[in-house]
Length: 209
Image (cartoon, one colour):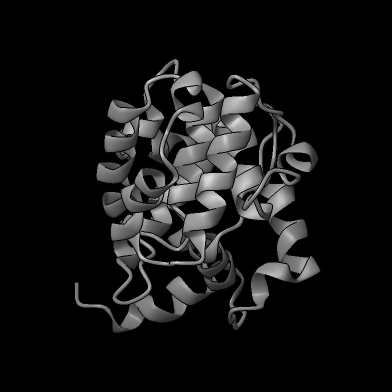
């Protein structure tokens, strides 16, 4: 995965070097149940309007809400405002561990783990719907909306996450699940894990040469 990820990395504004952790948290919040290309334009607009944490303190509530309106999920808007207020009050000095991040408004398991591992330098196993699909296809298991909470899935994700290169691994698995192990028409011949994948091996004989 690390080898594949090094040559197939996707480019998004929240992957820029030197990004403040609090901006990484905002990005992961915007990515909740949202395609990356949709979140990218909203995140860039957010950066333009609020380049530092202090500017969030003076941000009108309606503007913060309107900023993410195009992403849908109306329930997310008040939580976004609350999260922005907390970041401003802390002057951007937010916690960096999963348990502490989960105490912030609107921050659940995925956002906390992604923020810790991808932006704050703390190891955490990232599990979202795409990772669930990838791991279940690898192991040949059925999956549904509740699989992400199953202990076997969480344990597997944790065992596969490297001790030190967890950031590169996290992005590689997210990229693979988005671009190759897609929900429909996965491109198994292009997958670096196909020889290890039960679902991929089952599909290979039926694929065109």
